[in-house]
Image (cartoon, rainbow, N blue to C red):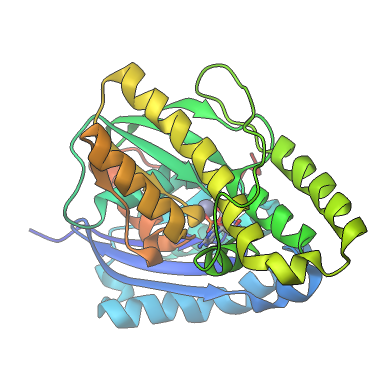
Length: 332
Ligand code: KG4
Ligand code: ZN
């Protein structure tokens, strides 16, 4: 029987990515990260769209070549339809639609946060259903109950900033360049997580809030820098370790609550922040204590990538969930 070969395209933010999935196995996952945003301290939407325009065709070509798949072998084209920067999404959608039309094959629209969760189905060992996924990215923070590849329910979410935003914004306050999350992770490894204490927000249920911690750190720094203008430089490792400890403890205490409430002990993590070494370590530790089976995708499938779009496309193809050529991307 002819294999199901999906070409997937991801352009929701500042990564231009393409992937080939054959019968549910990822053969290639090419990611081109846009370095241009670093000098602006955050992603500039207009520049992101232009960079996607430049990179998308070479990235698609590279994905096909690496997988040793030709255009005529493709069964369908999957693309990120939402959420994301609208101009960036339009580039990927335009290429995906044109290819589907030219090759006369189906088009599959994929929701980016759904794909982050299904990144856990790319490699063995895979979680069994139902599982919970803590999805932590630059734009979203969610606890998702996943009952099958296409049945997902968001049972908790951030009411304000996402966890990645909390990392990046607090990093900016201590003078680190964008994106600050990976840098906080790096310095935190050498610091004392209990040196400084930041408040834990009191939010009912399974929702999160991260805006308070940002404000708390802002005032904390102002106070300390009044006494010593070099406070941050002198205590960078301990500050980073304390920030990281608080953000991660907020995430894990809600995850623990969700697991207890639902009785589910298959626990996954996904999204860019799941690359955080402190978070991975603490999740594993908590998992051992709670008797959970813990799953975290390899690093390349944690941050934005088309491999996760491809695996989601694969399951949508299997269930016949196809998109019309008149579909439009959505920012939210
Ligand atoms: O999922 P992702 O690649 O893109 C979005 O969909 O947003 O997540 C990007 C976020 C950024 O906020 C970045 O700072 C954060 O993930 N991040 C990290 C680490 N690596 C990436 N945060 C903390 N520690 C890390 N090691
Ligand atoms: Zn993402």
